[in-house]
Length: 194
Image 1 (cartoon, rainbow, N blue to C red):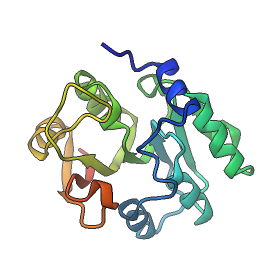
Image 2 (image 1 turned 90 degrees about the vertical axis):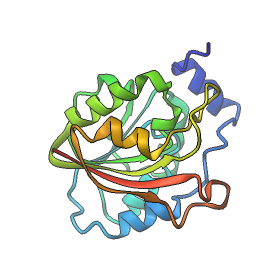
Image 3 (image 1 turned 180 degrees about the horizontal axis):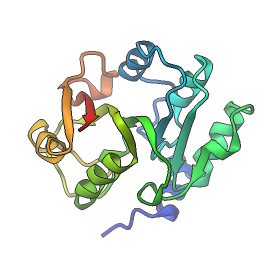
Image 4 (image 1 turned 180 degrees about the vertical axis):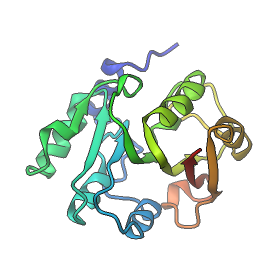
């Protein structure tokens, strides 16, 4: 079994093996960000990779944004693209060891890259790092769960079961504006901490 540790992810980025990297913020994430009015929200992008969402947020005046990734290369790439972005908001480390709290977590490809047995831990950790009334929003894949990954699939039924005890499911529906390779394979969601 593959161990999805720092070395695994770093090798993927070093060898340009990140097919999930779209090169810019995706339409569903941009649309969600565009409707946020409070630019002081403390936002996290976990398992950020090259974090093109961060580029967009930062360009729109959101400065209280943090990213975390196990691998150093994508964080270095972010800093090259955004030289004025605060170093202390680029965290190289394990999401499950994160000590900060946030108002909003933007989810794009992190959940689906985790080994499926970590999903219950993900739900607990998300609940713990969100401030009262905090939200997770973004995209989850909607295709049958596989043993081969990443990405690993999942379904609306699984997500409802996993999150409904500790989150209010505000939105969980087919993304209507996914990028072409992900068309009809993504669910847009907003979960609010109970």
